[in-house]
Length: 63
Image (cartoon, rainbow, N blue to C red; front, side, top):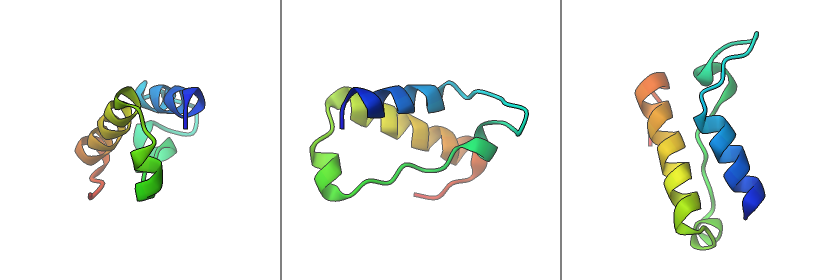
């Protein structure tokens, strides 16, 4: 877990729209194992939480 995950999260958070659809069409909740969560930096954890909260608000994802 490092720069690659952070980059993926930031891209997802951008809420990009493509020819195939918007955020809800191209994104899904990010769920990690407890071991993976323990390895996250504070910035990565904030980005993951922001992504999932956006999905809850826009797409109706459930925790």
